[in-house]
Every structure is written in C-alpha cells, then in structure tokens.
Length: 112
Length: 114
Image (cartoon, rainbow over all chains, first blue to last red):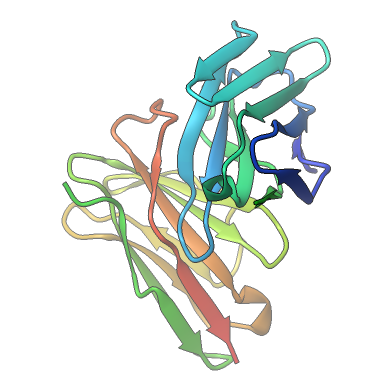
C-alpha cells in the first residue's frame, strides 16, 4: 500500500529552467510533508518542508506547494543547476505515529 | 558535531550468515529510525526506537530481523540467516525529539548477500 507516490521515476531539465517534481498521497491524516535530496552512496538530506496548514513554503530556489484537496504536493526548483542532479524523495508524516512515509523517488538530471 | 554515523558502509555476507549494522545518532539525539531501500524502490520505514525501547516496529519483517538501541552505544539492526532478498541499502536517521521531522540521515550501509 503505497501511501506516498512519485509517479515520475525520472526527469530531465535544461540548466536554468524550472524543475517541477510531483508527489501524491492517499492518507488524509498526514500533517507534514518533506522533500529530501539524495546523491549516490549518500543518505538523504532534508531539503524543504511544509505543514498541512500551509499551501506554500519557499526557501531560496526551492518552493514546495501543497494542494490538500487534491492530496498533491510539488517541489519547484528555479533556476535549476547541475548540482541539483540527484534523486528527490517526498515524504509525509502523521504526528500521531511519528514515522516518515517515503515516496519511491524521482531522479532529476539537469542538462548543462 | 559529527552527523549520524553508520558502519560499516558496505557489508558482504553469504546466505545464512548474520549481518549487524550499526548506527550512532547525532550527539544528543535519542530517537533513531531505520529504513531500507531495495533496488529501484523508495525508502521503507522499518523501526523506530528510543533509548532502550522499541516504539514502532511495524515495518520490520516478522522473522530474522531485530533492532536495539541500548542505553550506551549505537543502535544495532541485526539480520539473522541472511537471504539474497535482504540485499539493500539500510539507512538510519536520528532526531532530537520524536516530533522532529527534520531527522538527519546517515550515509547508509549497503548490504550485499552472495
């Protein structure tokens, strides 16, 4: 039962353009959503998060949008840079059980 | 301040052997989470521990897998009688409080069963 889904396993974007990574979830009890970035042979690193009471959070080049009615969130990276090439995981948590549920990841490749 | 330390980084075991994966959380963190990433899949929650207590092990296979987080020392994920299907990357994360969703991850242990 995949409660958090990233339907695009890979995405290629030209350097300087906007990268949009999407994530859908099924559990309406999730309180908080996070995006992690993962390079090969390294652990995931936290990137940005958003509470379920908000619809947007921005941090530099990264913006996360949350559409609760559609159970959808997205991560926008603009402008995209070569160092952004990595696998991006979205994750969600229900504070009642305190464990992260991850999506399957999207491999982003920035083309110079 | 050292981050979350996992060792070994790579572990090769023959079928039927035991695998022990260690995780030292960040200094001051008393909450540890273990995740497994199978090839071509996302991270799957396995177990959540606080010092000396297993809080949630709903993601742990019922047999051969166990985890502990003793009062002193690292958290240990133990896999007995490993099989090829156990080959995966195992990640540990730690947080200051159970509700700290900005948990910090270790670099992972890649287990290969031959």
